[in-house]
Figure (cartoon, rainbow, N blue to C red):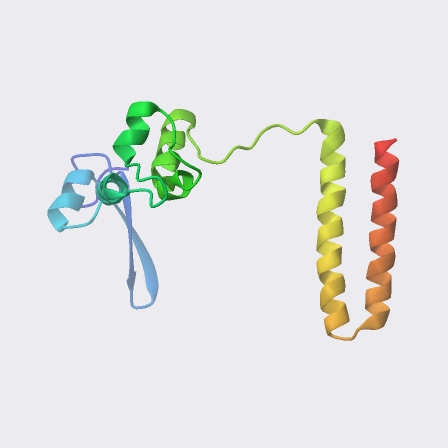
Length: 159
């Protein structure tokens, strides 16, 4: 879709505006967005990175006194507290290296069933706690029985 302002370039930015209670969408190019004073996604993320880098560069671990430059030079942290102090740096580094900061490994098929049962047991236990607090004892008894049934299923899957 072409830019709805200049018509010369590809409209890469979707601009949404509410006019008289109706949502109106425009597609504009980066040049027109800059001319109109809109903050482009690139500008927002670059500004955030600059601010984050400034905070990280000034950070000093209160426990061991290490700075980010020490961590970068030595390739390791000075103490356990450094992981908290330099968390944004670690997150950025992991995002650059792996494309994400959170590890989501594969779960073997056999264990996936167990994980689902464990998750359901946790959910039912939470429901049980709420039922007891509300003094809904009949519901609580049913939930207790459900937990026992799920626990048996868990034991069966171990065998």
